[in-house]
Length: 502
Image (cartoon, rainbow, N blue to C red; front, side):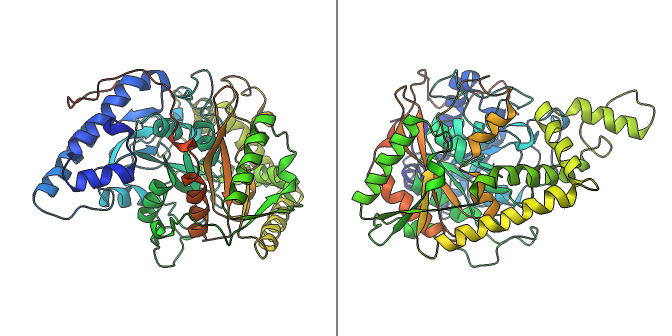
């Protein structure tokens, strides 16, 4: 097995024992990116020089006898809406295509302090608004299982990079399913933590009451390792959880005998494809066979979740993106007569159609006469959905449902129909509205070999149970071990420079 194919929990002990140098492991990843990413296009920026320098520093540190750090020498990809000091952070938008942040996001600082090596910034739907990564202003990312299909979104580049072994693991962000849906489409593990568990400082804001950064990994154990590092209180984030850090790896116990699994009946008839439903029912049978008790439950207000989500998120996006005005930083149209026309033209040319659609919708919602009619009603629905979950968790340990109603669709299939595209997130939106943690893990494949994801949801700050149930299912199945067939490549130690290298 090549170094780039190893998970974090496999590679880290080899680095600690000095069986493999950090530089060798890093070069293996960079070579894989060079070999396959022209087809997949997971990365907007590949940080070859930065990564190799950090790798050499890590090897020097280890050779001096200093103790290895928690993620020593592990290559990580960062979604390109998370700020990285000295490295472009574009948000996959023309508006920010030349923006170089003067500071690191808190999660980036935590990763580098833990010894992780940043190998690049991954593609996304522009400013995290989308479900397929087709709305990126740079290029569409392809699904490594089938290059004619999307990888999901908005964290599609991160998901594709992980399943294609172009990173050991990655960070994504999730506002309505942007970690879990692409994780399902690409056959990896994707966790959206409880709102506030992971700092949002340095994340380009989309809908601040729901945005959350989280891990995207090859397996559940790697997910727990990464969450251990990034789940920390941060005074720079007003919503940051103040509880003590938890070692989530101690909950990786394959035992769910006392677990009561709730299945929301409303989630089994929302345009669910036959292949996804079949895989989901088999996953339920597997959970029962492992000792869990499966019961039917109801989320009676979930039918209104998608509408409430797009009202709230669009309103918050309209407010958040007002800072992108062409004056302080970002794209600025030339030859304008005054600041008002400059801002209008800059935003008109700098934003893509999906971002403009949501800004216009959000501005309309926040206007006089519409705020009470739409925004306040959406907040009421949000409260009702939270109460639905609260009631269920008095009886159930967790909820399970499909991560998405379909497998990855073909490029161009839904991009011209926003409503159909939005339905891709019908199962992932409710946990965001309620601030709950959710994880997507592989649970099967359809007849064409495309991955299918199982979503597990628990109450707030119960990532321990979330990971234990996910780990138990994963250890009893082989779905996470399957990989797409990619072209052969040379994984030698010679350093490489990609087309998007910095």
